[in-house]
Length: 297
Image (cartoon, rainbow, N blue to C red):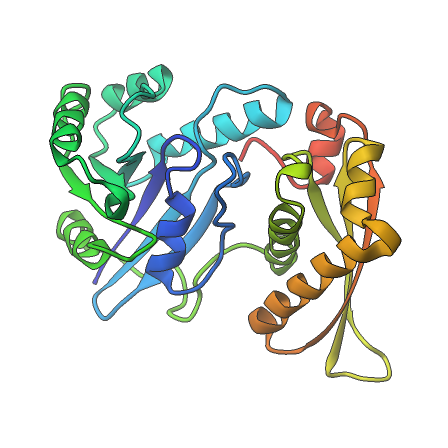
């Protein structure tokens, strides 16, 4: 039996969450074209006959613009010193954005092996450019291995798993075989709702959205029905109007889509009650960040 912990790290929107969901065969993180969607370090547990790999999906490394961003960056970088392997994922199409200097400094200061993984291979057309980009990256750090994959198309991910297992050491199973994440149920549900807010409102509502599950309880008269009450928090009155929509149309669409996901997740009938409130500048106020579950993890 082989086991170990692997940090998925990289810039925003390189496909870390898409990769993790593809490997696990189930959605535990929000895959989105919007950068900085992942806010927590989320553990996803991969199991097969002879190994257990605990992937830690981290927030995208970016220059923070608010306290939440600083907290996300700290949480991501902190994982580097406490794992068995690091997977630095980059966008195979973007050879213009330089790697974060502090990230490189930390990688070069520790002995933890690191795989360089170039994602979005399915969209690459200029392979000479990609080869030159790989050589440039290899000059920045002594990588244990270099891989090109497409998480979206599930290209070469199984081969990557084999190579990960090849460098892992023998160890115990840290989680039960049927467990794919260590995230509390309420957090998983709140992330499902937040995903639908981002997808449904599209560009109209930025990342100033937080979702809190206020209560979860089975109905007293119908034990097969789970009542969930949740609040969508935004920072401005104009954003609240967008989330609610004309006559409540938008928040109803969000609720309908989220309820289907939660139903599939829990396997039980769900009544989902959503409300939207304004919490001005919550991303810069530690008391609100802690109440919403964001901490220096």
